[in-house]
Length: 182
Image (cartoon, rainbow, N blue to C red; front, top):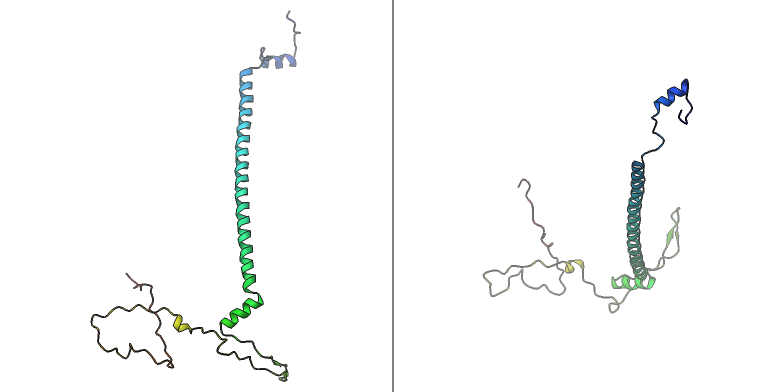
């Protein structure tokens, strides 16, 4: 007899289903499986590491951009603060020809006036800056030279007298006109 006891009944039927040489498993597929798992894990870690470092570089760039934009915002806020300071507002108002208002009067709901209204302060002509009216600031349309020139200027070309009011026609549009249907 061999070193194995003889099995009977149910145990014998189960023993016949299992092959006799099953005690030794093949090592090559197991080794390949372990190598593939380790290699896949290393490649996965490499991809994850490179994605994280790319994110870190992008974060650094965004932080630098945020810092520069914050500096620009602070500079613009300083400009706004300088322009909205009371002395700057007063200087700009005087440049525009504005004068300080007088004492205000208030109306009660019943129609009575509270306070005595005062007139706005007058500004002398020497203090008031000369700001040209808006029509003088409009662009002058370009004139095309006429082929024949007369010796005497026409009435349209004469200069108005210094006291006369002048108006200027609106400047022609520089945008090309479009005709629908073309």
